[in-house]
Image (cartoon, rainbow, N blue to C red):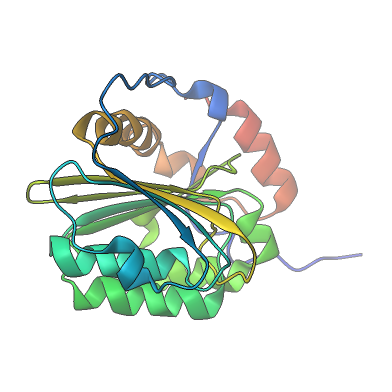
Length: 222
């Protein structure tokens, strides 16, 4: 039986083996927590959660899913201005990506990187296609990942968002931590740079099926 080729897999895209990361993977924080604010964010809005940010701010909250990660990113960008943004996620929803695109465009985004799980393109190829169309092939990398975090670099800000949220609205209990910390930011940014900076696009232009994808994924010497 002949099967049709997945048009998503026929496009060049970065695939990276997690055990190939050479950047440090442990961060030890000895800093004070005196600027930390804790919330049980069951009813507050993302604007109320983020509040007015100041250098070294640190937020942690538990939500009931009343706002999404994209809402929080939007509120942060309102205050930071144009930024370089890096997003690690397991999945996303079409409508939420459209909202993210509007937010990033409205705030004069300088650059964007998405790190997604390799199953994302198999589960939701239309969303990967939308990501490519909106942000370009160079903005997406695939690996085995379940970590959700966002990095925002703008002017004096080095903000890290760590959360249980994916890039979609989810009416469930979620946690979210937001911190302006250059050291933590650099630690996670190094991992992003490690992955995005190690890639042979010419070697991956002819990926046409999941079988080929796996063969090449396992052979990558990264």
